[in-house]
Image 1 (cartoon, rainbow, N blue to C red):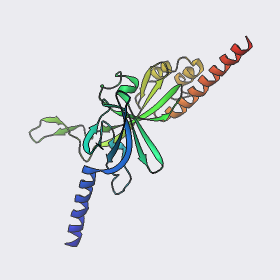
Image 2 (image 1 turned 90 degrees about the horizontal axis):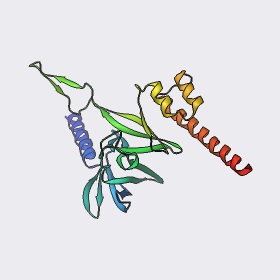
Image 3 (image 1 turned 180 degrees about the vertical axis):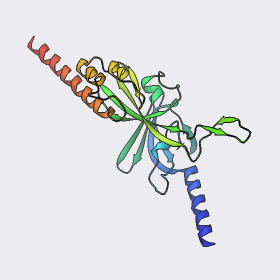
Image 4 (image 1 turned 90 degrees about the vertical axis):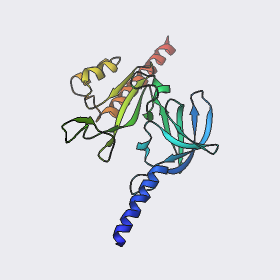
Length: 226
């Protein structure tokens, strides 16, 4: 009986924690560039008190001036959340790199590598299985549930505004074309020497940024000598 009640209590506790979240101070920048202080409510990781940032996909609950509200990517440019001595930054995709990859009021991104090519990662929910088979032999799309998984995706944005989404199904030619201003790098990707996929995306961005920096330094030296 004690074990049963303890189990029930734990279930209720985690549902309450998930529903209300833990509070963290911070601020957000609205779509007009105005900074607003707020307290963010973030669900904890299961069996932990650590904030689960994977829940900040399409929105996050916060309290501003005593009022609870939900911030979505379409309502703000960025979120900044204080976790101890660290500031966790989330950027609005729609305000950052346009609507080419997702709908305007879509997802939050987190910068991973910043440079001539900036690498962002984001979270998305993958439902498994994708369909439900009913007893009457009809099929219906499955709603998010216990078997749904949160996965991580990548987006690269260059200074000229061009972007690419990297997935496990990305084609080598597509990625090589994205980095085509670096002929050698594009050739290596096509030949399989520098595989363009989610497993090597950080390496690709670091190599491209290093090459870009060298090119700018070379141009500066030539200009100085002329």
